[in-house]
Image (cartoon, rainbow, N blue to C red; front, side):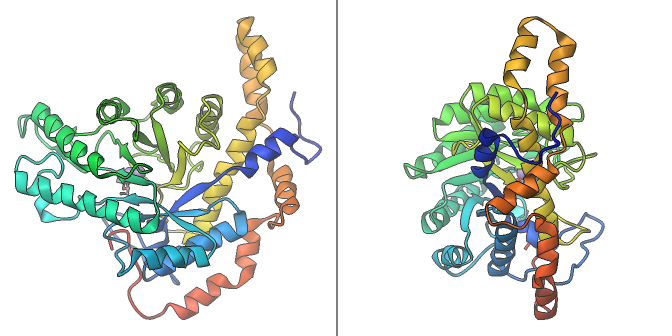
Amino acid sequence: MCMMTDPSLPAAVADALAAQAIELPSWAFGNSGTRFRVFGTPGTARDPYEKVSDAAQVHRFTGLAPAVAIHIPWDEVDSYADLARHAEDNGVRLGTVNSNTFQDDDYKFGSLTHSDPRVRQKAIDHHLRCVDVMDATGSRDLKIWLADGTNYPGQDSIRARQDRLAESLATIYARLGEHQRLVLEYKFFEPAFYHTDVPDWGTSYVHTAALGDRAKVCLDTGHHAPGTNIEFIVAQLLRLGKLGSFDFNSRFYADDDLIVGAADPFQLFRILFEVIQGGGYANPDVAFMLDQCHNLEAKIPGQIRSVLNVQEATAKALLVDLDALGAAQEAHDVLAANAVFMDAYNTDVRAALAAWREDRGLPADPMAAYLASGYQEKIEADRVGGTAASWGA
Ligand code: PSV
Ligand code: MN
Ligand code: MN
């Protein structure tokens, strides 16, 4: 039994935790909402520079979030090299570049899959420009999520759209530099309702396998039907060498983008266990990112809670006694194997993690330290003019 009375972690677990790096989405620091209402939150960042500054606070208090993903054109700036410098001045760096082909009238019937070559080329050109941005920021990954799909059976040819998608992706892939990658995200529905052009990991795998080694799958934890065994997908993609990145978040009903580990911390633990077993943890080939929006709660504390949830689940997953698990599995002792697994999950690691942070010069309680820092009051007082950045701008 792994009962944690002594608040120290085994040395191997403590060392492994030190390697954790989670990329934050710039859009988590803008105002967001639902199709019913975007609520304003005092102190919200007004431009990409302020979003990066806010993201840097999460890293400052947790030591877990050294990179910020950007979204084009939401994070449009005059000089991306300058934005990258701003990130560095704040102790972080710019990470994944996300494309956006879902907020333009031209894309009403598709973007990379569109039947009209003019629209398809426009969508391809947008991605080529994203690669230019990556060149300027030093980013490695281009993340593609497409809103493409249809609402009614017969509306368009499912097959022809796949062929056009493959062609468009090949053109974008050919533009990547030697050290750059394309990660293709899948989602089973929305905004299209009948069919989506990249609905599942299989479709993303098929396209990225055809492209080559520098094309990988992005797994967004919120993009699956209820009851999907996500850790199975993780294990399979790692087996195939095709898991490029995670977009972590929680869902109750749809693509809710809620705080990771809020809806189902046990699922997060199971996923992380599979990542660790498959060699995907602390492996630069598998990027850990958040894809979240904070509609009601304050944004910086929301992101602090999120990275701490990932850290807590990781610590528990690292605590699984693999020898005992292996022995129980070999003996087909179902209950013993399950008990070993659950012992790790049920271990309260909070005090141990607080001590771990203090050992590394970090605040034992990052949330309390942020709230006491005065940063929140300062941005609420300073950022009264201008328009708060929102999910769509
Ligand atoms: C839309 O579903 C989405 O939430 C995808 O998960 C993307 O990763 C994200 O927007 C940002 O484009
Ligand atoms: Mn996502
Ligand atoms: Mn999503």
